[in-house]
Image (cartoon, rainbow, N blue to C red; front, side, top):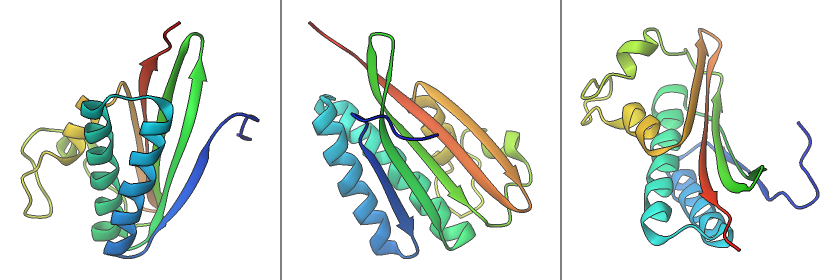
Length: 140
């Protein structure tokens, strides 16, 4: 889908742990520019950290797409994570709280789904795409 004239778009390659930090900085700046409050800024930055970390740990490389979106009287941020890794074998299991495949706390994808307003996941043995949106109501 082509970007609209006023849409802000960032394509962030994830190939190393340093790219996770870079993704966090870019997304935090975008949340500030869009007018999200500090709590939502922190939550959305946490989401991009989780998505980028999953790319790095499980697929070793991929892309985070971050962009501003507008629908009706709302603006928001869209984050998608795309990789060509081995895929998620059991998506429903991965979305259960406290289930971890990386010896972490297991709050990753369920937390992403809970923080964001929209969440979808497609996965196969050829890769995974996770798409999310967080909305901010326009005021005035």
